[in-house]
Length: 245
Image (cartoon, rainbow, N blue to C red; front, side):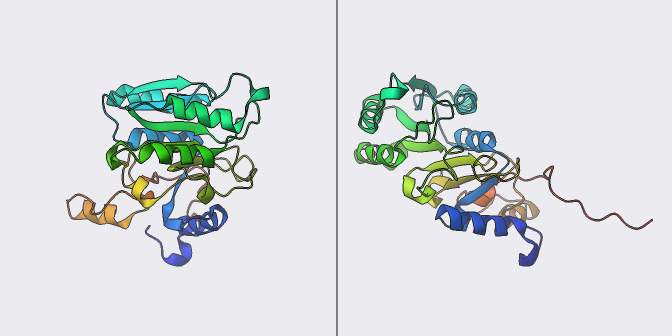
């Protein structure tokens, strides 16, 4: 944030990531890993008592724990359901039908995993998103069911781009099939989805936050990807050169 454009490495990373993901660079938050990304999303959503987070029994512990820790704080509930009984006989039609059957009036979020690390099953995310679109037609904007995707095992291994999936939030580390260093990850969302979140960690990526702090006021405008990007120095970030002795 405090560097000129030539030295703004976060911007360069976002630009390259955006080209690969098929999205706009200002829709990407940079995170250390999938775990942090899921945490920022679930803890940032304005969930309240009476709201329900729906998640599958097939998701990773960090997905389940991100939801559990969030709902313990905000009073929302969590419900798990199975997308299939046997991975060997699972079908796209059957998976989408189970999603439709699982949604209830109180459901506000559906969490899924694009590619399951335990079985290699690749979920029909676009079809699941379309099923939610149908359900959301009858709901006011504040009660839409949001789709949160753990995409770490699909990113770099599946043909679809993130822009084609139809989800609201896409969280992934890049050290799996992108072969990037550990400690590098992304969260993608559209501006309307970012605007729903409350940032959890001070940002080093949004100048409006810094200006608001200097002027002793609240930041103007909606939450965006930069404001959700955690600030602080990272373990792999180079230090300034030491002065000659």
